Length: 141
Image (cartoon, rainbow, N blue to C red; front, side):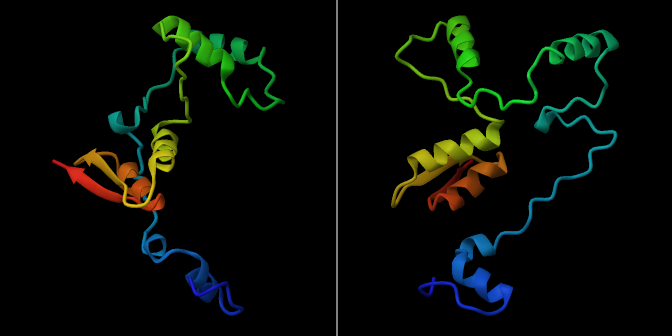
């Protein structure tokens, strides 16, 4: 950065405040999935059976959807710890999918000179989150 955003075009402001390696990224394109079974995304192209949808609807009718859920997921963590026999001093980290978990772990472990290793080929978020966190990414074949 040059010391602060200057007044000028939007492109000039972006150039001043966004790191060059982030500006060099292009948007992640998600392929259309009609008619595909996307095992890589854990997506099922088939509708749930009516009995399952009915039970889900009934369960959802008892949920206070007008309120934010428990951000700490305390009940879910307690149930998982019991079911998996996880000792109480240990903690569980839950996230909204693998993208968020990879991001949180990268941010927690990032420090000057840190390197992230991940299998190659693999999930693109390892490389991207290493970049976002300022770490070097090394693909492992």
